[in-house]
Image (cartoon, rainbow, N blue to C red; front, side):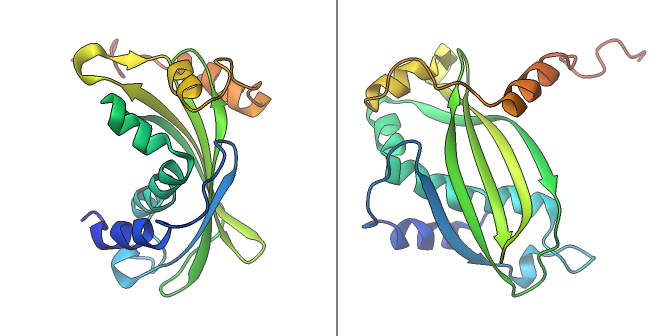
Length: 181
């Protein structure tokens, strides 16, 4: 089940927080509840991806991205993600989440999110988002950037992001397209 009450709490908590510039980092704290764990008594890997929404949506509000998308009738859809899990989060442990914009290319906007316990990074995601407008498909992210007062061209994406983009472009789509039926 989606954590609607937790999302409402996060949005309420940050409703009067100072605005962020698009490349600033949003920091939030959370707790791993019993309904977040898997049979090994740690934060479930799928739930981790859901909980990353608790950082992304307030980040979008604080940077003005969400309000702009609503005004223009745009949607923002997750179009891909790469995840690294490195440390366990167990029941009732508190953790810190960090969310920031990395940049964009001709089709997608790239965000980075991480979960921390103390000085240790527990997980890290690279997320690709598509800006959409109804049935018109994907819009160029430069439109969002310019509407936010940024130049249309992104700062250079880090090499590790470019490597992921290139590797992902080599994956067949649809998957298993050449497999026998």
